[in-house]
Length: 145
Image (cartoon, rainbow, N blue to C red; front, top):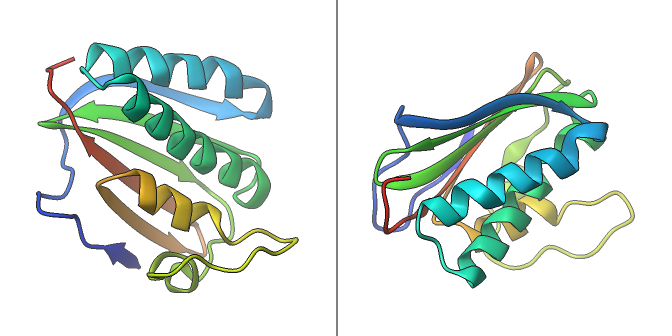
């Protein structure tokens, strides 16, 4: 497992559930719309919402492309807005993708997505193994959802 340390705040924990669903490719638009609606209720401004929805969308796409084609998402609130995305794919060596300080090179197989997610969020955790992957991201909020 690899965790990128949070920037000056605590790691996400179980909080107030805001949204939870399973998803596949056909559900992406619906899930993105719900993530955006929840973000607005949590007091994120427009730029923060755009970054947050982009980061969450990248996680959803990674599940579709690399994690078996379907997964689950939960949004929680406990002083920050947290997104947890899980899949039951084959897992991957997260350290190669997450622990980068500099932008990775562009490639035909990807490899930049988690780096981008880390740039757009305050917290990024990746736990991955042969039975699936769990990724948590979080951003600070100004509201209680």
